[in-house]
Length: 355
Image 1 (cartoon, rainbow, N blue to C red):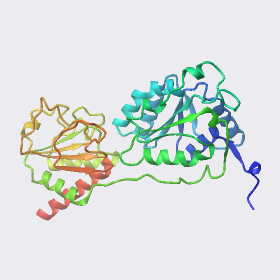
Image 2: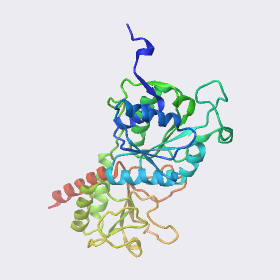
Image 3: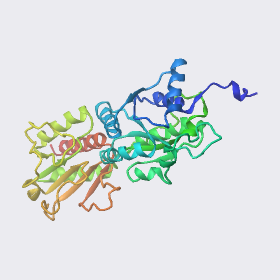
Image 4: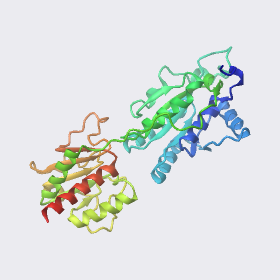
């Protein structure tokens, strides 16, 4: 016999969101609050009273800063964080930072309240005039083009599974921000607490380049007389940075940081040629572009017609960009560190076979 409904432990949906985020490894929720936050604040107080572990809520004066704090925390730790904002106006202020996160493959769990749709008769209904002014027909349109997934929380019992799905999609290859809107009426409802601290319902999908593509890319670079590497977003983690630095010097391949966001080799590395690919790009007979949205300026930099080009990264063809027509003889799709490691291992195998 199942337990009576009123005997099942519960939290408000606002508190349940934080509880689930903590179980998934989220340390901080960077927040800028508004009229949608009373049930969130009550949920935090309720969870604290029940001694439930929660991420730390950090009040941030501007939404753009909140997004970039989550962005920076991921760069430093590799753990995605959450951002919680106020209805459409808070989301609008965060939109430019969401573009940054999408372009740089940064996973962020972005949430904002949704203006109540009810005008009375329900807990959480509209109470002040701004509730009418902040309603939108399509609030997620503010960020839909740059998030990987979006949804509106419909029922409190969905909290655990939807937070799990958002987290898994955000951290799947290629990583990026996701968005969920939170209607105030739903946040005010009780949510079953069972399972909120359990393991994730689903795990992220991590892709790796096909072995034959890795082999073709390695052959192109190994056989080139004047290879060039252009890197914009680094080469993965600290271990990959060290391995790649050794590889570039060992093979004698120049590395250019054209419009780089992160370094692939130290600036004092013997093969680091700075940020200008001229005149290297004109002389190159093979180019490896590592996570480069735009590896060169087409009107200024023109590789030779016979130059082979290999693109490597989480989304090497940048499929979200409508027009991006750089040559790609081989595309290696996978998390940058994994794909670089596979390529370096194949090149080492080729060298060993020739010695």
